[in-house]
Length: 118
Image 1 (tube, rainbow, N blue to C red):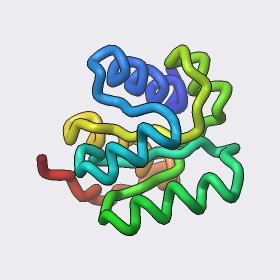
Image 2 (tube, rainbow, N blue to C red; image 1 turned 135 degrees about the horizontal axis):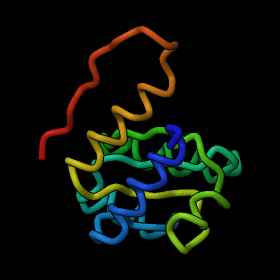
Image 3 (cartoon, helix red, strand yellow; image 1 turned 30 degrees about the vertical axis):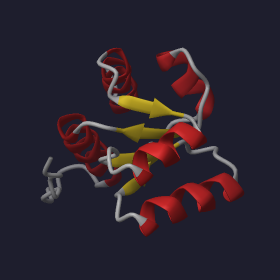
Image 4 (cartoon, rainbow, N blue to C red; image 1 turned 180 degrees about the vertical axis):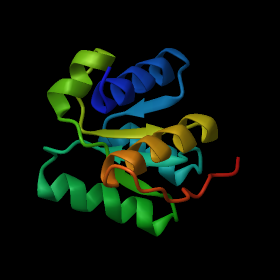
């Protein structure tokens, strides 16, 4: 199983555990209410939606990252095609951040990933 499949699998698990808010409005609401621990965006999200989502996350001090997967891949894994997801659990958020950091680093390098306290 490659890294992308592992990430999508973890997102599916988080969805079944009801720890995700899917879509721009639901994710923005989770960020505003302080429930969101990590805001994820799809790789093919429109520039305007990306700017709005990142702006909201920055305004409320919520970490945001690109998931590195497309909206279609998210839709296939979660059953709803969306480009913006709010991860509302610190454990899932920490694991996803570690996975995204591992994808971004070259093979054989290590780097600490800050954890998110609940």
